[in-house]
Image (cartoon, rainbow, N blue to C red; front, side):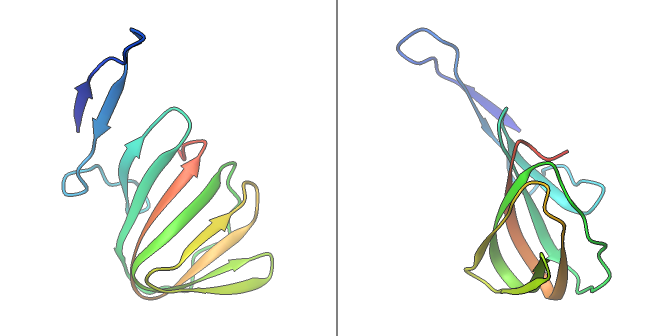
Amino acid sequence: MRALADGPEDGRDAMATKVSSRNAPEGEHGEVGLARGERLSMRMWRDEPPTDDKPAASRPYETVGFVISGRAELVLKGETVSLEPGDSWVVPAGTEHTYRILEPFTAVEATAPPAG
């Protein structure tokens, strides 16, 4: 991680943070931690293997995601949504959901407030 400091004209401190996915920390569920701010964070799921046994979960944060490669299904409120490269999705905070990974899956998610 590399921080860049360049204060704005009004004199307040500003900090930009650069995170390279090549050497970013991996989380306990295989996610790669990317940039993280006070109000939102990003993470990447890289080449997640196919599975259909992920337990349903409800999280206290809103999630938006974007599929880079692979295919998955998002199961949300009894509805199944197909996810393919170029698709994006939203999971509202507090909504029970799960994913079925159909083929090696790479996606980026942003959460607000920051996840975990």
